[in-house]
Amino acid sequence: MIATTKAMQEINEKQRTRLAEARKQNGLSQAELAAKARELGASIDQPGIARIERGHRIHTDQKNLVAIAKVLAIEFGELGIDGVPIDDAEWAYPSLTPGYASKEVLELFQTVKNHSALAIGECVGLYVQQTLSGLQEVGAQYDKRAPFTHDLESPTAEQLRKCIESHAMQYGQEVATCLNERVALSNYQGGGRFECKVGLRTIALPTRGQEFSVTVNPISYWIVENFNRLMVVDPSLAQLRESYLKNILAPNDFPIPIKFPSAFFVELALVTNDDKIVLLEKHPYKSVMAVSTDKRQQRRRFTCGIEEGFVWSSAFKSNSLDIEGTILRGLEDELGIVRSNLTYWKLLGVGLESPSLNSGLLGYAMLNLDSAQLDRKIRSHLRAKDVPDFFPDAEFIDIASAFEALSNLRSGLHPTALMRVYLASRSLMGQCLEK
Figure (cartoon, rainbow, N blue to C red):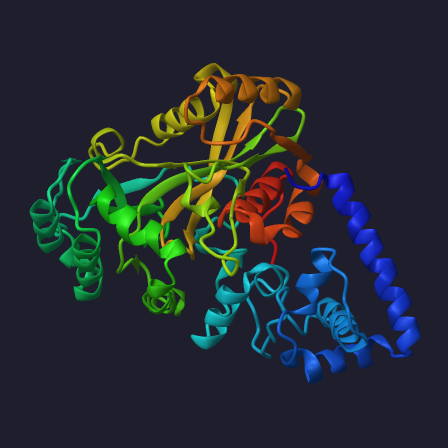
């Protein structure tokens, strides 16, 4: 597992001490070091801040100097957390997006000149409730322009091509071409069952007299597996993914259109009754987020709860989504948590996973178990499963310090995990979304 909260605090203290000593040796003021960061920051291969956060040794004086300068420049608000220069535009969430959005997301925001949205880690807030009191209702309309697709049972290559022609073309020729190439390259022989899932098509903000709502469409899991999940590990899809991200990150009118395949999930942080958030490590063979095909790719193997996809046949019912049923299915199947263990759940917004382009209702679930009881339940459940979703060694972090602690490990987290932790901690402390 990863370092505990206490270990992280000790690492951070050592970093601060090393920075203070090196700054004294270099004889430069904080302002001079910040200026040095801007002058030399682009010349190093890996941002010094990333190396310091991971506790790596800085081997040369120049790199050490730049790394220190970057830390100070970040404190001054002149650089983002990944060393991305921040322009002079006024950010709607200056204490969050510039400092906590991933390098890729921050660069894309600046490319499309959008400074109004909230992003934390690799999660873009398509809508986040300002009061964090919880969405009272989530309306769901069926986009009847979208062609229906049935569950696929051991489909042949010809059946998949027909599915692409009738169903995937709603997203445009680029998606259809990508999927047809997958059928051809794999020399597809059939096999497997692919359920019809719920996909996200538009988001409508709550207005006076009208609740927050989404428009959804049926989407085959075969498309999700061969487009969204593949996108996480296949560099050949990077350019296409970036073009879709630019489209969705650009300033939009409402309702926000989702012009690409995006499976819809409910993604919750789990909170125990002794005020701790759970930290779980995903098995690579159960989650593509935990897979790394080469050294350049990060493994997003840690999460703070469940990410459960909506299944069309059971979740979509007459202009509504069965949110609680989906939550309970995920909790019991993955962790052995049953209805009697759930005190309540709260939804706080909708987020987009930038690596996969999937989306989810974000929030948290309060359990009537303490951390020791939950730990025993999780261990017992996972050890009894032939193919468990997680490793059994869970960790627990105080809700008050979880966001700060996990922000140091964001490159190893599920794309929406840090956003969920932030939203949960603010909501549980009775606080609004900070600007």
